[in-house]
Structure formats: structure tokens, C-alpha cells
Image (cartoon, rainbow, N blue to C red; front, side, top):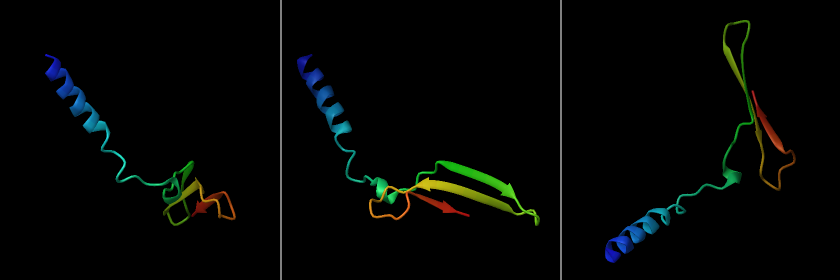
Length: 66
């Protein structure tokens, strides 16, 4: 019984220890704070998005796409 507990514990530890090899830094992500949808006169969809910039060297602290 003690051996079964140690095998289960070891398997659980190995399951949770494998997760950091494919991480992505916040500087490489684009997290949207706001998304806006609009339709123009030609009935085309316009998408607006506002995202914070986490890069310390950036001139502005947010980025906007239209």
C-alpha cells in the first residue's frame, strides 16, 4: 500500500513538472482589453481592438488597430 501511494505521488509530480518548456512571455502576447465591432456605409464589418503594451522600451503603453 505504501508503494502504491509513492507511485501515485511520483506520477502526480511528473505530471505537474512538465509545463514550462513552451512558455510564452507577456512581451510576445497581445491581450485585448477592448474589442469593438461596427458596420460602415458599405455594410462591411470594422473591428477595433485596444491592447496594453508590456514592453519597457515602448513609447506608448497601449496599441490600437483599426
